[in-house]
Length: 178
Image 1 (spheres, rainbow, N blue to C red):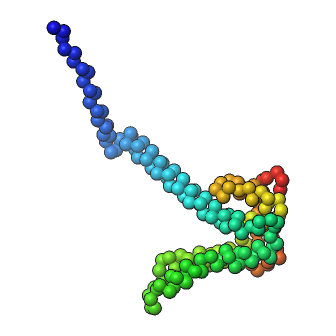
Image 2 (image 1 turned 90 degrees about the horizontal axis):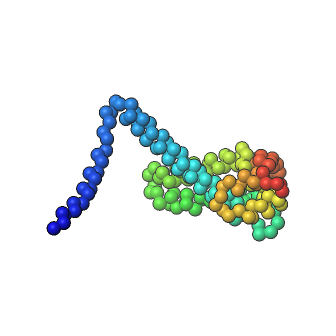
Image 3 (image 1 turned 30 degrees about the vertical axis):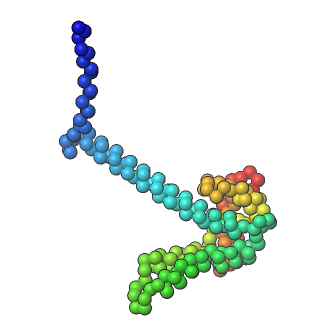
């Protein structure tokens, strides 16, 4: 009779090495884990910032006329009557939901702060895409509403609520047709 084949024994799972907490290797692992955590946080913050920028630029994308360009006065009206008042309904709901004598909700405080901050930015000089400049508007219409890097191609102006007839070119734009 033929000898029975003995199968190879399955390799035992390797035990994870345990390092002394004060060892050089443990310090390397700790530094590596800390760096990975920092990079992960930076990536998530960058993503949040990009999303908020896309929201802002998306607002102006939808405020843009189908054809032609806006006048400076129309741009100021859009900012004053639409942009700065976009949270007013939510703010009123929060105020109505609050009982008399109760403190403001965290959401209400956040909305009021945002509203005041944006009003102050508009008063001291708000940087917006130049929707009064035909080549910029033409390029802006081709935006896919996702890619923030595309916005660097556009021309930006700084406008002030205190001086509605003044517009200063703050970023000239990098597109060759501008």
